[in-house]
Length: 92
Image (cartoon, rainbow, N blue to C red; front, side, top):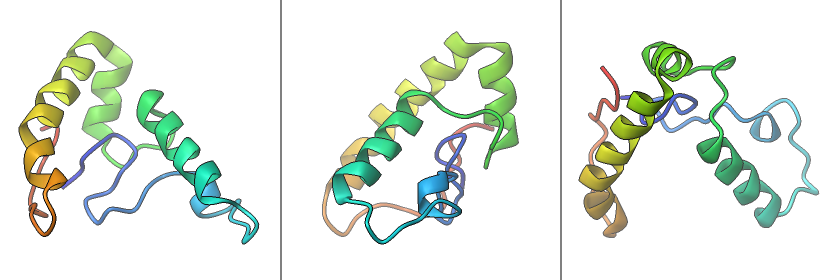
């Protein structure tokens, strides 16, 4: 169910501003920039998906290829309102 190295199958994200560094004064823009940064530069030291983290550390080009393939595959169904599935495994 892991969609990304730092995203759990439940949708929880390993991003400190969403947990330990949360402040009510954070703006939507700051949160979205944090998420964008995490997606652009995954953190292998805080993995939700240990296999993805291992692949990222040992073969970044294959990791990037798998992420691109899966983004192409799942974006159409997740981009539509009310569609999508919770039983997706990004990297096995």
